[in-house]
Length: 312
Image 1 (cartoon, helix red, strand yellow):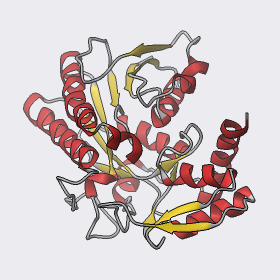
Image 2 (cartoon, rainbow, N blue to C red):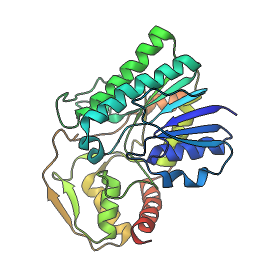
Image 3 (tube, rainbow, N blue to C red):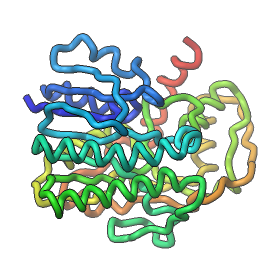
């Protein structure tokens, strides 16, 4: 039974990770400030002997015992990370420093949940890990993009300077149960609007593309990455290489929810990427990982969850 610490463990991804770690017999310490996390996501785990919750802000130092640390703490939706950009940057940068210091003290292996946002509005398509990105360092998204880029830098500096074992994963758009409705992420926004028969809002002309990975597939990638050979640090892309235009996604959601929603178009937000699709060649080769759940099946599960949230 490994001692595993998960920061951001009450969030969308963090709670699914806690589930997966508990299922495989680990002793899990879930750390979350609950600013954007939701304790309801982990209520079903609280009574288990191998699960513990601690309310804590990672911008403050933490003392704990751990053999593995998954650092997921950071607001991930534009609405949340842009509402307090200074705190977002602090969470990414000071949070990474504090957790890397803890990994250094305890000898824990450290997993950094990075993001495809490090690629910005990319000039290369699809994006592989050798691409350095095209990011506006002074834009409204920079608190998140540059915070995550800095966290990656810190991981590799701790690895080179202190010998800290690191694993860096760049997460592409992920969806599934426990997403917060109407939180600014496209899948939950579209489903929330469709369930209410409200107009589905598409930014720009709807031809910008994204790839969508179901959360269970991503969790399998997390576990494989954390437990991969120590000389494989990443960064590694984790995402579904299927590529969909926003207009196509909206039409799928309307069809699957049997909604009466109409599609409307509005102006594109600043620095919104035009294309986003992972090259997962490295993940296939090093982790024997690739997504298995198709978009329609994953959307059905997500719709069922959000329907309960909306109507119960």
